[in-house]
Amino acid sequence: MANVMLEVKELTTKYVTRYNEDIYAVDHVSLKVEEGKTLGIAGESGCGKSTLALSLMGYYFAPLHYTSGEIIIDGKNISGIDPDVVRKSILGTEISYIPQAAMNALNPTRKIINFIEDVYEAHDEYKTKKEIYELACECCSILGLPEAVLQKYPVELSGGMKQRTVIAVSVILFPKILIADEPTSALDVTSQKMVIKMLKDLMKDSFIKSMIFITHELPLLYNVTDDIMVMYAGQIVEKATAKEAVFDPLHPYSRGLMGSIIVPEQGLRDVKLAAIPGVPPNLKNPPAGCRFAPRCKYTRNECVATVNLRNLEGGRAYRCVLSEKELRNYYLKEAEQNARK
Amino acid sequence: MLENKEIILSAKGLTKEFGFGGTRTLAVDHVDIELYKGEVVSIVGESGSGKTTLAKMLLGLINVSEGEIYFQGKLRDIRTNKKKQEYWKNIQAIFQDPFSSYNIFHKIDAVLLDCIRMRGGGGLPREKKVELMTEACKFVNLKYEELTNKYPFELSGGQMQRLMIARIFLLKPKILFADEPTSMIDACSRATILDMLMQLRIDIGMTVIFITHDIGLAYYVSDKVFIMEHGKFVESGSADAVILTPREPYTQRLISDVPKIYEEWDLSTVECST
Image (cartoon, rainbow over all chains, first blue to last red; front, side, top):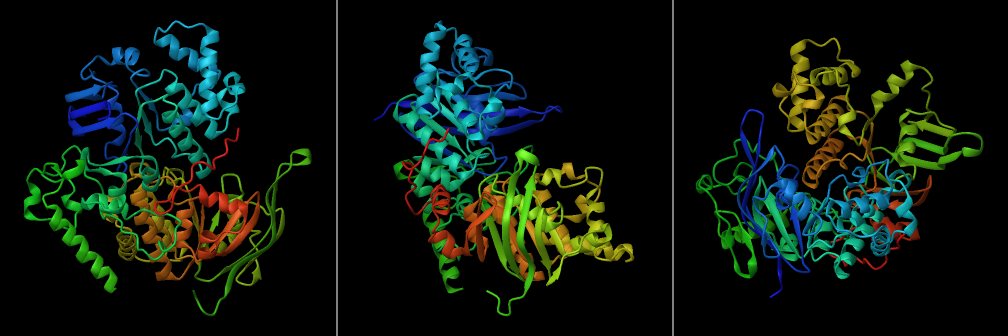
């Protein structure tokens, strides 16, 4: 069995509002990422994907608070450590992060090489400027950036290059796990493909050991990841391999998400998009029991009771009161009805 | 799709040039386009290919450097403000960023009332107006009672974009330009919004022009697709022909860059441009 790079057990974190209300944006999430693997996290806006990313890094600055659970990175438990310590000793070396608006994350008044020098300085790694420069060059060559970029200011680079620069800065200390939070949402398709290739190359050249990829673009997720985790209202509703999650989703919500895929491929023009009606619940007072029940087609009386993750063979899991057989029956019936139309 | 085809909007040799002297840029370069009544058309291209400039010229928001635009067979005349208002009753747009599409000092109520006024319903009794607005909000799954006293910034991005569709529902234009209507919202709301737009298009029989870089979206919604590069159409034709069997190298590259689920997504062809 491969080395487990990141293991999270029942992690719960909350936001505290001005009026002292607790909002549990990450609710009993467990996950495991092995060496060389990529985990994808899918879900609608506001379902807690980005909060999960921050929580995994131990980045607990108000209003985000740690409640319970364990985060173990390569055998080292980092749960509950002071965030200032986390920033110095864990961020960058153990776990690293590409923020959502990476294009705006660079200080416009500093050269690219300064950002990289900063990273070493912050982590008390004493290296001469020459050594740093050589390492930076190596990283740039993998990312397809010319060396000249290091002496430039962020405004001189294009969007795709800025994005790759941010990636270079975040992997320069060889983190064990890299969290990419919607790294390509602001890029056009060509730059997107380039960034994805770079991330895969980084993994191949063991700059990073494993990756968590967050996005709502499912076709992209399918192509990048090995496993997919679908989140809804702060909870995991389905865990499966990428193939199973896209072609054979079990939870009604994942099924709805997969129904909104649009790709330019033969035959998909005639498939009607299946949007999920309604909006995600307000997490201040989430619905009791199954959180998806108010929007679900197959609601029953039992849905008001707490629903646990059901584990299936092969590491698959889903959160629903209905058994696998019942769900599949529903889907089969629906497919038949559609075919008749 | 439709039988007796009637050209509703057409342009000949449409050109837009920005700057002057040595720094001239041709944003749109002698483009000919014909739009038929009731069809759905997509204009696809990368950032900076001139799609939005083309749309703005057709909408009458910016001046045309060269070329002619015909609306319903006649040369378009929007030289006075009054004529422009008349033109915009027939041709409307939804823009990319819903947050900057509204006047922030106007409540939702005022936004919708404005649409009724534009359709010549300014003299209707209040109850009739409320009825119309409630109907429009219901069409896009919003609740009119909850919205009346809100300002646009109190809504979420998806809600705002749906309100835009409610406006179109009230205005019933003949032509609608949708400039990246779904690029700021997530994949799930995207399906809802597209469904609504397509339903509305059938209900009031309008022509819809999607301007997008999302090839999947263009393929899903449109009858006809135009591929644009450096201000020119490089390829055009029915959606199936252009997207499934592209002929031009530019189109082929664009389509191969989109992540797919049934075909292998070839990452090895990426060139590291710098």
